[in-house]
Image (cartoon, rainbow, N blue to C red; front, side):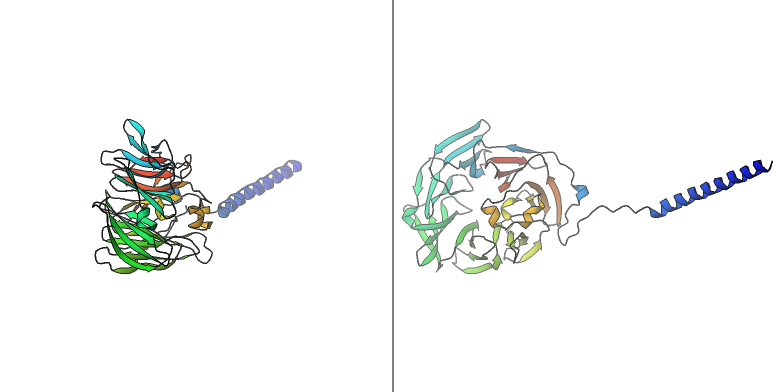
Length: 376
């Protein structure tokens, strides 16, 4: 009887200990649980960048346009595309397919097509330019006008262009009007020689912008072709790159000093004053303004964070580095950014981006061919 009581007592004690241990375990487990880590968010001044949770994979709407590598292109009112390839062949793309119009030149360093698509300005070699008429196929050398260092069409007409002439000891900025015979030359300004590129984005403003490098302090001058007045647009900016938007605002890139790694993208006003900094990093040539709206900008943004560690813009311009881009839609008026394209299975290094109608075009630096994406 005593053994039975003793055994019962032992069982009760063990049961109490086990129960107490179980209670202690649950209490410890509850206390030691960590609170869940909140989702990462991005906070910036000005433009709001989508957080990682918003970056859902969007369906690709990108398709190939050209069969050959393109240097420059434009869309005609008919919807046809005119482009010049790297062999100097002028080509046209229509609903019926792609065709070669004519072989205009054997050497192309750079080419710019006028807004109406009727003329192509071709740099054949340093200081050697020519104009190709896309309707007749005739080529007009510009060497008779001197050593041309840089040139650009008027935004209003393809029969007028501005060019920077090297005079050995100095330079002159001139306007050439070849709608009359003989062509009329007007000198806008004379100044000491510097490594400038000429841009004519607005009818009454011609810009001279120094060639970009992270190791060069860049300046930009603006000239009025009517009054021949001159002023400084921006100055003292390393790695300066500019893209002039149709709404009279300007995208500006500046290199990161003193390391020269990465840089900054900024929105400037008509007078060169800073409006806003962008929180993402890309180059102005990877952006285009949608003229169908009053404040919409599309930018191709490298998805690789390593882009910010490159020497910019030098590494990109010399093709020491290529990018895989996503596309962001930016509302400049509302300071909002939305992801527009991010198909990780497709790699595009988007350059020379333009928007015609509801279609965004770009040249993919991997194959130099022309692609397009319909904008919704």
